[in-house]
Length: 136
Image (tube, rainbow, N blue to C red; front, top):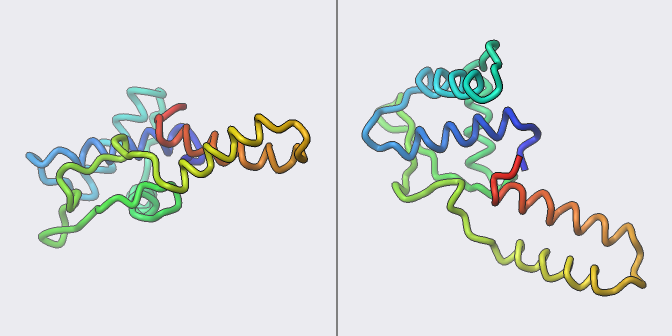
């Protein structure tokens, strides 16, 4: 789950841009798109810097949030998804996600377990479901 709502807005915006194969997206274009989205959705006029968008794409590429986005640079300045059908919003549940859900169901069914273990598992499930469902 993104650290905050603004990060989620930026991730979704970057995702929408990179899915659009009919336009070439430079870092400056992505920064402007994120600034526009933050202003439209949250009224934030401050905007974001290029470094923020670069870090967002790095996080999207990583396993940290489970996105593993295949973001590539082509012609040395343009960004796109290597897989044209990829989107962070179209991600299926992973095996790890299914295991967490099964464990949460088991823990909810058994009231005699320690509450801390239950809470830890539910926090992981909650974070992953929010990420998958793009819940804010």
